[in-house]
Length: 398
Image (cartoon, rainbow, N blue to C red; front, side):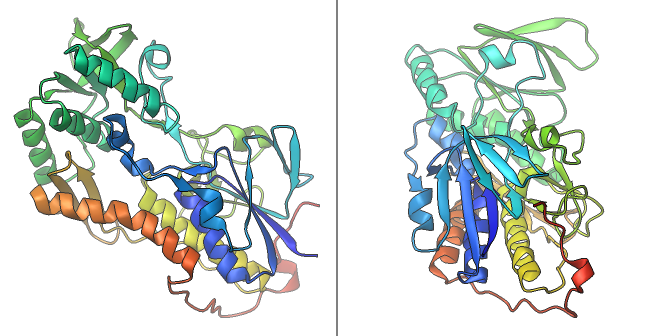
C-alpha cells in the first residue's frame, strides 16, 4: 500500500511541494493536496487587483492535472496527529506524512476597530476592497494605508499612480521599510512624496472608526484624525492557529517550529513550509515571510519527503537571499540587493529598471510552478552520504 502524503494549503509553497514531490515519487507515493479554494492566488499582485487590474485566473486542479496528485477543495478545521487524520468540513483524510503550507493572513487584531472598519489585501477581502475603492474614487474621497512595510508601500504607490486625484495617506509606526538599505528607503520615500502621498513615519495608530483613523506621532500624546473613505490595513501578518490547537510546537506567532530538515520538532511526521514555518537554528538565519522563501522551502521539503521514502539521509534547508523587490506602481520599482546571508549590500536598482525586474520576478513565481508541472525544471539527484538505518526512519502516527 502506498504511503499517503497530504499537503495542506494551495499557495506558492503547497502547490510547488505537491508538483515537485509528484515528480520525485514517480507514482510510488499517494499525494493529496487540500485547499479551501480551487483558485491559486498570486499574492504578490493583490495590490494590483485592489485597484482594478485583471489578474490571470489559475485553476489548481488544472495545474495538477496529469501529475497524479489528487486535489480536494475543503477548509481544514482540525488535526488528529495521534490518528494521522485531517478533518475538513465534515470529512476525514488519513495521512502518513503531513506537509503544512497554510500561509498567512494580514493581522487586523492589533488595533481597536481594524477588523470591523479596515480592509486588508487578503485574497478573500480584495474584491470588496476593490468595490469600495471605486466608490471612493468616484466620490473624490481619501484613502489611508496603515503599514510602512513592503505591502503598505506597494499599495500606496499603486493608488497614487492609478488615481492621482485621490488623496492617499501612508502611516508607518517606524521608519519606512526599515529592512531596506538607506538608498532604497530614500528612493521610495522621495517617490511617494512626489506622487502626492502624505507620509507619516513614527505614527502610532490608536483606533479605526467608520470614515477615520486616529493616530499619534511618536513621542506625542495628542491624537490626530485622518479622514478615510477607506482604510487599508497592511500592518503585520498572522498564521493559522490550527497547528497549535493540534498540539504542534509553535512560536509566539503560531508558526510551526521546524528543524533544518523542515520537520516539526515535536511531531516528525509533520513538515511545515512557507509562512507557516519557523526554522530553528537554520543556516539561513531569520527568514522573512515571502513567496521567494516559500518556493525554496517547498522544493527542499518535497526532496526530503522523497529521500525518506527512498531511505536516504535528509538534506538541510539552505536559503541564499538575492534581494528584495518592491513595485511603486507599474512604471517604477526598486530591487534592493542582498548578500547571500541576507545582509544589506547598500546596492539597489530603481526606476524603470527596477519595475522591469520586479515584473520578471512576479512572473517567475507562476512560471516556476508551470515548469515544475511540465517537468522542465531540472531535478538534481537525491544523493546522500549514507542510507538511513532502520532506527532512524521517521516515526509516523498510525
